[in-house]
Image (cartoon, rainbow, N blue to C red; front, side):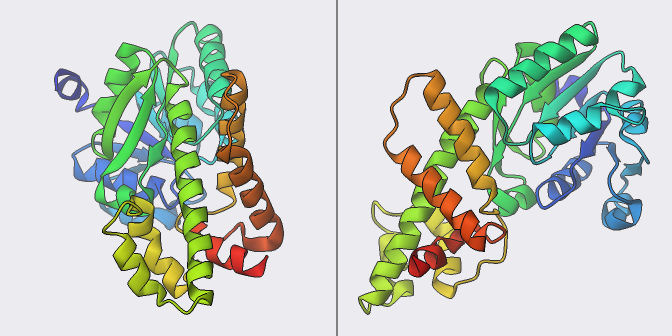
Length: 298
């Protein structure tokens, strides 16, 4: 609470205003934060600007106005792109800036980036990793599970911001959040793939899938994935909320962690191969619920 009180007035920049970043920014505004934005054009974000957000034409201009920047981007290459160049964040030469990297990224890559920025800015730019789980529904409700890695002071500052978006938990040094997200994605991918297979098997056996999923939800097969994707699978609604192709990179990161820790995984290689095949077959831009269609077409 002390950290939240101390940092409650600190302005926050948000970059990456997609399906997740946009509602996270809205929740920060609703919690009384001064939120600064930049992106592909201010006309895209009229709702956030009307709610009180401030617009900047470049990341450099944004970085000059805030002490904390929340980055909700696909991966580290997009982060690097925002940092570099004459209009990038580092061009603002911030004296004290905390970067919260909420993309799902390589743990080793985040550690390397944090060390490099600490060295090149003489400690002026600090980094925490804070990937999230809970999907668009969780982002809109402000109930995301937020996996945070970094130094104690940096995590305290980040958590004071992130509490508006969900439940931030400090799991260890920088990179720990990404390891946790890799574990999360292994479980999510395995579960939604199993649901897709079960759906095809049950449907081809003449079982009413909606009735089956309601029944399974009350037993050990019940899960958050069944709660949020079961109806989509039944209705074959694959409009994207959690895009399937991003699971490939997340499972690649999990594979790297398994190799680094000498963990001889059983499920991970199979699930990774399935999502690679699913994406290669043209289903990558669909929601992860598309596992039913993928299995049915094999």
